[in-house]
Image 1 (cartoon, rainbow, N blue to C red):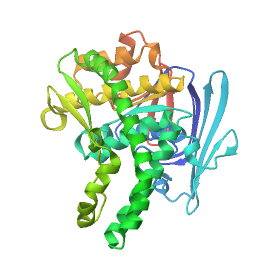
Image 2 (cartoon, rainbow, N blue to C red):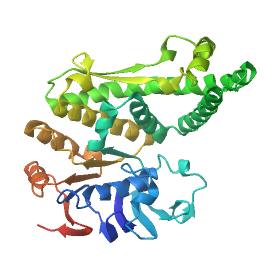
Image 3 (cartoon, rainbow, N blue to C red):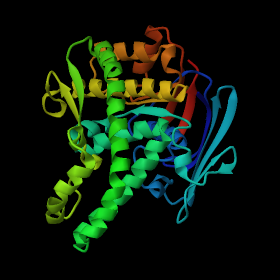
Image 4 (cartoon, rainbow, N blue to C red):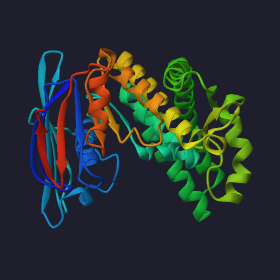
Length: 365
């Protein structure tokens, strides 16, 4: 799968921009704040129907403009697909494939898979368990539509349950009705997450060893209340506590993904460089899973990945991702020559675009 063309109108700091990509490796360089990451975000919109930076769509419209448009042309198995995303202030976001509107945005998820590695990934490590669950869910949903449907249904029931518990007007009979609907969906989500962690673990280890030179031992552990008890029994046992706490204390919405290095929690004992290497390896393993499950290579978006990495890890990473295994790659870097020098040093051909405050120039040198 290749993105051949990207067009922007009033998107973030771009009034108008059109780019064509024939190469497998595309590099955007420019000063911080020039708009490099916004280009990756536009590509993310086309693939995932949303920004990876700002979830409020209207805030991605150029200042005082009435709308934004992001359009792209993909080549996928010798077929050209045109994707359109448009938003007018005060109106619903419009998403089209080959000129036809989607009934639900969820129908688009997974059709054009992508993996993005960015500084914002630090939240997956440093913030609460919700961030790690969201990451797992976002990956599985790209290749398993049933999982996405079950997750939406499960979250809706938990939201109803929590609202009733908070208001204090849920009878045991009403709780029974809600609790009868949770195990089917929750058990499915639990099983798919376990299968995902089992699948990604060896891939993750492989990539971390490559990037770090096998410097540290890393591990993922999936911690769930359902690992050792039936969902139905656990719900009944937790009912009194749920009433007292006024929210649902048990279920897959409380699961945790433990990230460890040398047997210790990653966020407490790893350096920033080690944490970044950990996330890069995890995202590359994510790429392999999506490529296998979808039967096509996702786009790989690398945003400011060199920060916090030493020279050895940087060179190892670029040698790895420049291989044909990873398909089309988009890279941003604030240092105009750094990434170009690395790619030339490993004999990797690439397209180079200079970004300056809403202006994009292809560098033919």
